Structure formats: structure tokens, C-alpha cells
Length: 335
Image (cartoon, rainbow, N blue to C red; front, side, top):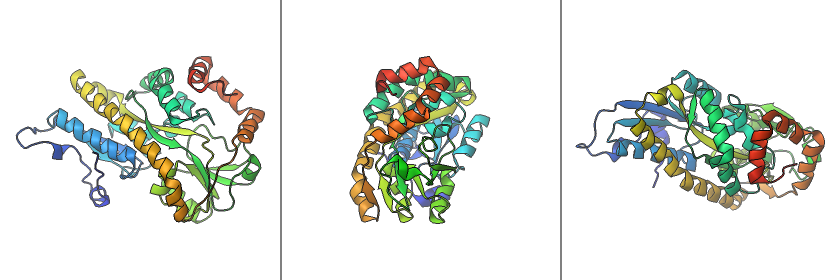
């Protein structure tokens, strides 16, 4: 079972994992000592399973490969960590597809509004034909992606001003969005405000933004319920997390160790996905007790508004026939 590192350990800079799994006789000096950065809090399933994968890698290689896991933006926000990854300052990153799409546009294909009916369909698409195209495009930009995508969940809209029941409720609504290519909110009549996650709580607290959109697990972990009143279960976008490596750093690792590393990360993906889905599905009572009022709007008017705005036609043209057709093999006809 994965065990999260304590906040004290992270702030003290002792985020190395894997060493405890080794006996003194089996441990050896690390030949490959690398770092992995992620914005997710340590008690989220993404965080706990990254730690588990790193421990398993250290154990399976008898300490030859040691990956330090830094969570909760300890190495900087997503944008800065991605820059560090590209430069080789860090070797690995677990990053949301909406952020990674700034560098590799095709990564955003799974962020198309209302594309997936459930998480199982999203996993199949990204592990399958859609993911094959996306991972090949990552390779061209100097990144190597592990074959199995991880899961943050479907995004929901929270607000300090009013529940979102129809597209009309977005008019004049200042919603924080991440620095990502795809956002449905301008097409729905809202006023998007682009901010990194590190700035979000303060933006909500000071009413710079009226609301935000994230999966329930992220909303709870970051305590956004303290500065929001309503949560509308829109399920408007599914977000996955890719575990990626700097390609030059990856290519310096012998093939047999690459196999160990990749297998360890992929082995954690199914349990991580299940735990995230269970977490998101279980949180409504807890968040209600913490002050959020929930509603579940009919998504049909939102989809119709996106069709009228030309959202789907625009992104189909941007992604091209091959990738869009690959998506619709899993999602069905989107628009």
C-alpha cells in the first residue's frame, strides 16, 4: 500500500523515496539518481502512487535507480516544472494533460468538452489508439511518456456567487482556468481568468475569480470549499495525468532499467485510477458538510451552446482528421 510522505518531510527537502524498501545488504549506491515533480498534494491518489512507484523502482533495481518524488508544487508550479523537465533540471514529471498541451497540442484531445461518458472510456482511449498518437507527438518534443495515463477525474464548477444551472449562469462569471489551450468557458459566455494552481486559493479568497473548475478530490485536497459556496456537477472535462521523462535523460538509462521504471509506473496506474474515481464519487457528503451546496445540471444545453459557438468544429480542424477520428472511436460522435 502506498504511504504518503508527511508535509514536514517535504518542506524539509527529504522527499527521497524507495530507500526504506531496501535492506542494507541489498542496497547499493545509486547509479541513476533522479527527481520527479508534481503539483498534486501528497495525500491524493496520484501522490501516493507516485511514491509507491518510486519505492518499487528502488527495490526492483536494488537501489541502482532512485527517484525522488516532490509533490505539492515543491519544485515550482506546473509551468516552471515543465520548463525544468525540458531543460533536464528534473528528469520526470507527473503533469496534467491540460498543462502539458501547452507544449504538445495533441495532448489536449481528451479535454474536449463533454467528450467522455465515463472514466473507463477515457482510460481506454488514452491507453489505446488516442494515446498512441499523443505519445508519439510527445516523443517529437523531447519527452517520453509512460504508456498508461493516470487520472485526476472529471472537472466540476464551483462558485462563490451562484450555482451553475444553465449556460446563462456563466454570463459575467469570472472563472479561473489553468494555462491550457482548451477551455469551454468563453464559448459558454463566461469570463475566463488564467492562473496557475498556486495562485488559485488566493484568487477565490479575494474574489478576483468568482469560481473555478476541478475534480472533487482536488477541490477537497486544496480546501477550495473554504472560499466557495456552490458546486455544480457539470462533468464538463476529464483530466488525465501523464508520467513523462526528459527524453535525453531517459535515453541515458539502459534498456533493462527503462523497462523496470516503465513497468513500475504502469503497474500503479490501475489502482490509482480506481482510487481517484472512488474518492471523487465519495466526496459529496463530506464537501456538503464542509459548506458546499451541490446541484447537477442537465448538460444538454451546455453541449448545444458549444455546438452553436463552433467550439467542436474549431477543435476538430485544429486536431485534424486522424486524431479526431481516433477519439470518436471511443467517445462516439461528439457533435
